[in-house]
Amino acid sequence: MRVIIFGSSGMVGQGVLRACLNDARVEQVLLVVRKPMEIKQQKAVEMVHDDFFAWADAQERFEGYDACLFCLGVSSVGMKEADYRHTTYDLTLGVAEVLVQRGVKAFLYVSGQGTDADGRAMWARVKGATENALMAMPFAQVYCFRPGYIQPMYGVRSKIGWYNGAYAALSWAYPLLRRVAAKYVTSSDEVGRAMVHVAAEGYAKRVLETLDIHAAAYSK
Image (cartoon, rainbow, N blue to C red):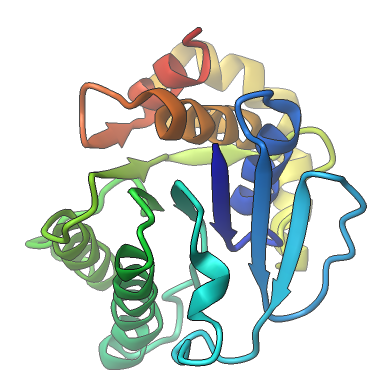
């Protein structure tokens, strides 16, 4: 299959890209980025695009792809709800509308554990509204991934410097956390492998919580 990744430079997206490059089911990966990543892999093709709200001059680049693995996101910390909704709901739905018109069959969206359109937390409401709107679109398949804590693996790093320090400090505890709190803890490698598997083979649920992510990651 041929897949599109949004957010390939972020922590989740790095794990997804790695999984795509290592999986024989993926023939080509289109990385939609604002700045070049200079990935030197035969499978990877970069599409540098400045404005993720405007696609009139670039829509043709999405034709012939089977699935979009949408890992793009921003932190809600310090943001007003209207601004967060614009950079989350409006941006994601705008991309999805272009892709469905160009024949992309599957859209896989990373939200987060606790996502709830009726929730008390602002980010949860916005992410929940985004999930609901995506599921109402005429894709053949839409899947929403809700990971909890994600431990970066295999050199994956966050764009936020102090996050990397926190992840490094917690790395020794990761094996223990997996044993005692498996439904809340996963890794960048497992999220990536799960997204590739679900894009290729589908899954019984449209919303995947952490335990579903584990199951999909290790499915054959």
